[in-house]
View (tube, rainbow, N blue to C red):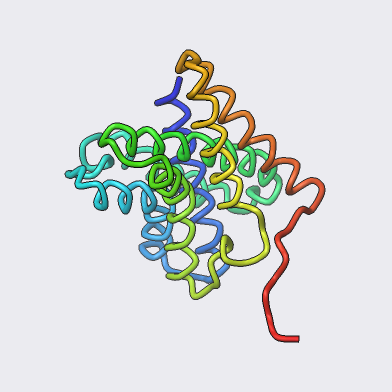
Amino acid sequence: MFHLLDIIGTMAFAISGVLTAFNKKLDPFGVYIIAFVTAVGGGTLRDVLIGRTPVVWMQDITYVYMISIGFFIALIFRKKLDKLRTSLFLFDTIGLGVFTLIGLERGIEVGLHPVICIALGTMTACFGGVIRDILCNEIPIIFRREIYATICIIGGLLFFALKHFNLNNDVLYLVTSVVIISIRLMAVKFKWYLPTMGRG
C-alpha cells in the first residue's frame, strides 16, 4: 500500500506539473520535463544528498511510466482537467503525506538525526514543486503564504514523537500521513496562511 500510494502521488505530482506548464504555454517537451521534475525532483535531491545512488527513479522504471502516463492523461484531457482539480488536489495531498514519510524513513535508514530526517521528509515532499516553480519563473509556492512545507515539518515532529511510544510501523505511518493530509485539507478549506514578511 505504501508503494502504491507513492506511485499515485508521483503521477499526481506529474499532472500538477503539467497544469503549471500549460499555463506557461510550453512546448510538449517542456511540459514533460516540468512534469518529470515536479514528480521526482524532491526525491532525487534527497537521494543525492544522502549518497543513495542511482536515485530511486533510476532503479525502478515504474516511476518513469507513471510520470509518462500522467503526462499523456493531462495532454489528452486538458480541457476537462479543471473539473478534476478537486481529485488532483486530493492525490497531491496524499502524495505530500506519503513523500514526507519516505523522506523520514530514508534519513532513519542512514542513521541521521531526527531534525535532518524531518528536513529530508520536507524536501522530498516539496522540492519537486520548488524546482517546477523556478523553471516556470515563479516564486515557489512554499516560500509564499500557503501552509505546505510547514505541514511536512509538523508531520515529521509528530512521527518522532509517536516513535517514542514504540507503535507498530503501520500505525505510525497511518497516523502521521492522516494528520498531514488532514491539516492540508483544513488549511485549504479554512484558508490558513502564514503571515508575509515585508517592509512597512
